[in-house]
Image (cartoon, rainbow over all chains, first blue to last red):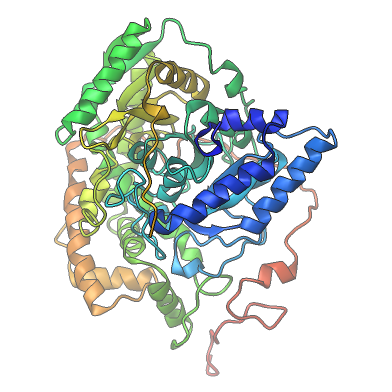
Length: 490
Length: 100
């Protein structure tokens, strides 16, 4: 078994049985990062010393017969939006360049409890605002399948790390598609759980009613094992829902009988690349061949999703990002004239262009005279979007759709056209507005060799159904077994 | 729904948002925001008259916990990331001048 090409479950078995040690596995991934990350740019910070120390600790635990956690010895990459005690957490922003969190996020605590090995922190669009990872203040991340293209975003570093065999598992955050879209662009599995399924404690806030953490893996089983560890109630996040977490990895291999797959006409809108459309239709055929029923449903308000989202998310962001004032943490300008100017100058220097645009857009939408016309209007449309989904899920168990209108676009292609970049989120952000779970999984390749993702969406807390349905497709198709050929930097 | 966004509008919002923008940024921001605002006008096609706004996907009631003392961040840790402290407090420029 090649460690770098093994799935998370295979690695877990190898470590548990003693075929490989956690140190061996961790070393293999650290070496892969060393070899390839100068071209890919997935990591902002690699914690070689800490990772090897934790791996040795897991090996020692095993040797002395102590019980092992659910992810024992498994290396994992963390998006740099998650607070890690005494490991840099920059959010891809100059304003947090020197920030060292004094505490761990709840999911980090859970990962440590499960004996996982944290490899480091991955690149992202600044404050998770973007769809290409080009908005990082520090570096561009390249798509392992074609370095001239973006890995998607905002969790582009995490998706690229898994695709390039630099980590078997990774964590991302998804506010409008930021896990599912890069998963699709990089040919890996990425899941956004139901809002409230995973604690947001220690996740740096972007848009609090939309943000949710979730797993990346090279296959569905890896995502299921990781979600099982991440999910659950946390009293420190009062929006986390107190509801038992199913053992996703145990039921995964059980196919769903009588599965009803919904297809919405609105998900095949103008601008959808024909190769993406045909991958989704081919996936419907796979499900049909497995005995599923295909049902036509409608989501009449989905075409208003992008407009509603780009008022709601920036409004929440404008409010959340008010905390970066150069007082408690983060960048403070060297020169200023009084308190107000200290705030404004520190923020003007610390934030990049996209973050500034969203703060401006949000403050505008919330300002006196525009609040009703923009923010409140968007919230009403949000309710209609949620109602559409509720109605659709009366007729079907899961919705099958594209993840993105096109495969990965080129680095630089959309960076100067914010609206075009926003429109690329059209198929993913509905799940965030409505708080629903969604999974993106490999569904084929374009003629030019780029991965194409397919998306399954479900009603609230249908993660188990989504994972089982995803696995049914995965078992019938070869797409998740493909790996990119990486160019070695000379 | 709105009059055309002007550079002055953008400058005013930047001031409210405590965001210093250069002249160039102000110019670019005005045209980019105007395009986005023009796009979001499609929401006006939707009749939302009887619709209640949905601010949050989990429509929660208040969540309470018992009022029990718990460990909290130590002062040293809380100050560790601050740009300026005196070892005990966060230090900011004077807020009130001598005449107030």
